[in-house]
Length: 401
Image (cartoon, rainbow, N blue to C red; front, side):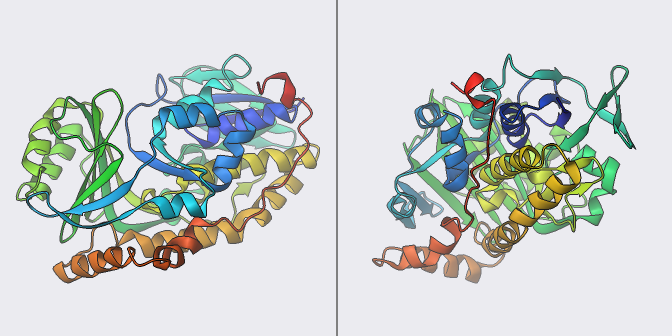
């Protein structure tokens, strides 16, 4: 039985562990933080990622913890509706297989599918990799060296495995000119169930989304140089206060309560573009290989797709990693490239840099009310053109219930 070390317990990592186990491999999952992450942001989930979750027996739980958003609404300084659009078109384009949920909830549900069947190492990370003809010697930050047949980096935009194997992140990262921050609060006064509200000024956007259990999510997207971001929580909060300090709508209330959180997601909006997703016995999956950027809206589903295909190709190749890695990339390369191009086009819609750009964005959204136009405008990006392969999973029934 081939052993595979997977770095990262977010989305791609647990999905890969599940399908590798179904294929008869022995995966080990390592995560540098002490526990699964909470908070973060919400994602829209549909398409092939939804199909994979269904094959894993997760759809009932995903719909239970998720949300079915009715409207995306743009508001002005006083909170009045400027424009917006209903989300029924997304449901129609996906046959009703469309749900919004917290990324951390999806990660938790995926992790529960491997609990008890996969070795998991929290609060540790890979510090060194030495590839050998018959395996990979892995040096852990805490602990001795271990040997695995293969190593997969599923550790996100800032992948340590990618850095150790391929080189510095700057060689592969394309910054899209924006920064994103997100946090949650309990007991926030304003609540609009199943409505995503967005307030924009030139170069910055604040979004609000009502969660279950009297919680509220806030999302900031603003134009900034990604090379000079503060590295401390206090510095990040200070940056948000400076950029949004003159904002209207609910900016003053949100910034006042920003002091309450110790769990702030804060990062630049970037893509990862690489010629190859593997080198020797080491491969990359999800954002580590091809991050499409947070604003793309499909990153979690793409992470699951890449994990499923990577596991399936390893199974089909009988563990011959060179063949499997080659086929894995061949199946997904053009599909992922198209998703990255679409995300790059879409990024500026979150926070247009000028008043004219905001006006134009709002006119485009207003036009979505014209019958059929929204279907034409977003149908290309919603539809999945890739056909999900049907691989053979000899051990699937042993733990997939």
